[in-house]
Image (cartoon, rainbow, N blue to C red; front, side, top):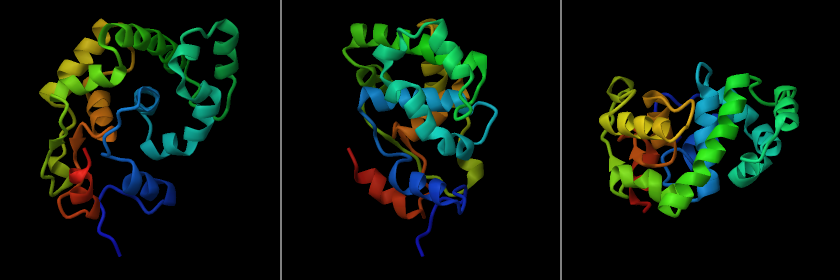
Amino acid sequence: MKKRCSWCSDDPLYIDYHDNEWGVPVHNDRMLFEFITLEGAQAGLSWLTILKKRENYRKAFDNFDFHKIAKYNSADFERLLNNPGIVRNKLKIKSTITNAQATIKIVEEFGSLDCYLWRFVDNTTIQNKITSLSEIPITTEISDSLSKDLKKRGFKFVGSTICYSLMQAIGMVNDHFIDCFRYEEVKQIK
């Protein structure tokens, strides 16, 4: 039996996410945009709820191709608002379109979303040494800075807490518990 972070439920979808994705450094712009979208969609909901809807999100949002999403019109917005497979929150749907447009501007300025995001941690994963849930921060100075900068660039649903969750998801920080079997494995990934 593998020892996992205590927050990981016994749901197979959650276990798969914990064991194979969470904390693994992501450098693909499409995947980074996917995580920005999903973390924003999660606001006020559980991550498991979003994981269960993830495939629906991929289908509804053109597999998170931010170039396509940036061109969505009112018909696309209505289509999404009526899609029972995603979180049908007007502000969250609109934010995905707005964030896609802002992502294109970031790519034009920095060369990639990857270069933009990872510069906040000097392109190196922060290796935390978590032993209990109470030690996991909700926000940090880095997530505060990232949130502030994203908002300045027109992003929505990117508060500091959402940004810290994003940082955890895409491997900017390794917050696996030190006794979790994934801690050392993730630590070795560059």
